[in-house]
Image (cartoon, rainbow, N blue to C red; front, side, top):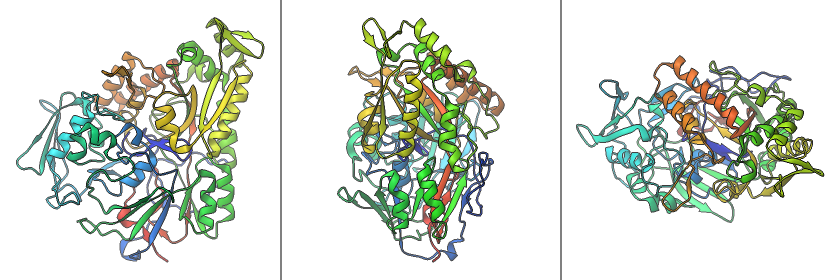
Length: 568
């Protein structure tokens, strides 16, 4: 979950892999009812570095100033945080347009050496030029500290995921401080996704610094083509600037300004010269505005590992019964939602029936069974069987009303549209819904993380590691010493030890076909548990100002921040 993030319209959480990407595309948009983009294709304006002007700035819309800039923290596992921090933090592996991991020559001097006998062991040889921008060398000790912070053993660290790290047996010094030896207790197929991003030892050695040191400020040194510049809470801007301490290709831009702009206002911001691109995703209003602005922007479209879903808080007494959650799933017509949200975008309105693999992934399989089919009569029957009997317009059990507190972020058009459709559908099975709109910046840390909701909608933003990066969403929560739950990114707050074990087996399986079979077994069980309900694969659709180079719909590919710039 540490590549991109969660998303509540514009708010995103880093996670699941699924489709893929490669450069190219004519920026012309698409015809009606386009199927999801093919794997291995993305749509960015590729320009050689020597053809990109040096200087200038990029204004990058985000939801708000993040609560924390620690991308490894539970509250920092957001797309906005990833977008900001990936310009400044070490990425030992990047993924290309096809989702293939490629070792990063800026931080490593050679491809990491993988050994599998007697145990899986990876040796990283760090670039001697690689230093934090306070002059401290990046060494094996940074890797060791991150492993200890994220392996889940010290519950004082509020982490978003222990996946991969909990399988590491040791991180040791090799032949020098620049050589890192990582030994696993068990095989881990997605080992390239660990230590991405890498934070300094000073962050990961202290739970206090990890949890609060990066709150709304730079909490330590960085090591990338950009560095922190200024944070203006009033203007809702975070400015990063070219870092002269960077040893790789010099950033073309002088600075990038991440500006908090409401989802529904981003297109107007670009039209008015206040921002340089906007994400359309499944926002039909933004799509229509983009069509009107085609002389000023290019429309960029790709297939991405991103998906919209409904999360159900299973820790609430009235939602703790799997039969109730199954009934809610059957009462929701996902085809209607897909048609309403995707149809106006020229996108084929297909429902998503898998949480691990997206619809255009080779390993995609429909595991939804009866629970994924719209069946209002069956939903009513299940609710009756669970003891929730019709009482007037609603349902009650033991004097308690079955009602849904549906929390959504404000000013996110797709969340509002989805919640209203779902509310009408649940009303038909006598389950009333109250839609509660909260500030975008508060959705996760104030409502979802502490469990102050019944249902919500947001997006998972994925990467090239669909199995391992999904695990933290579904891992069974355990109690910390203070009695609170260590949920990682499991906002449903329920799980299954059996499924946890299946996830581990899938992540450890080095045979791709066997791993995919195990992953699909996991998804089939998730359909029975109904921690969340997939709706549709989220379009990777953007309006990008003409003249902006090396930017667009990236799908799987990582952003190369130092190559972004202007041609005119």
